[in-house]
Image 1 (cartoon, rainbow, N blue to C red):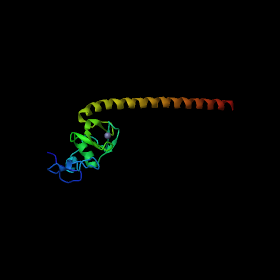
Image 2 (spheres, rainbow, N blue to C red):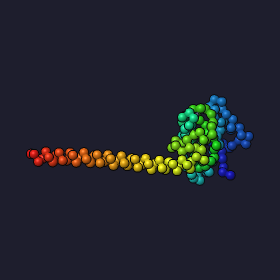
Image 3 (cartoon, rainbow, N blue to C red):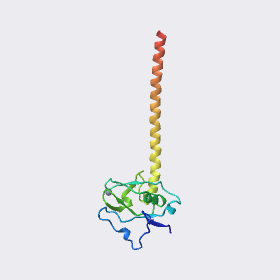
Image 4 (tube, protein in one colour):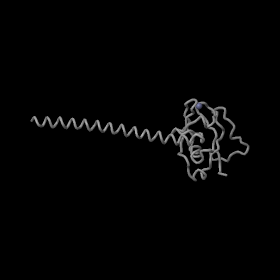
Length: 154
Ligand SMILES: [Zn+2]
């Protein structure tokens, strides 16, 4: 089993007392993360620090240990905290800052359609660039033609 600890590096309490909710913040007293050695074994996802709660639009930023735990093992958590709502919800209600759903069961489909979205955006950007260059070229040719005309009248 991978080694785990709390975000402050302390051991996970066997009595589960870290899960108690702090009434001032709505957050747990402590959150479990993978140990630094475990995270150092390599990420399977980018390290993302922020996510959006789709129900309220609020953005929450997490600490490095938590972000790296998601990157090392996207299946590690089943829910997360929304700073705006002040409580926890299932991952299905959240998207990462790059748009990928936090719910792992939705990620494959998102990756597939995101690839298509990016290809289309790249294609549209290239078309715009070609149109712009064509217009610039025509403009330059008109200027050149008018200068040549002026020169022939001298
Ligand atoms: Zn929220």
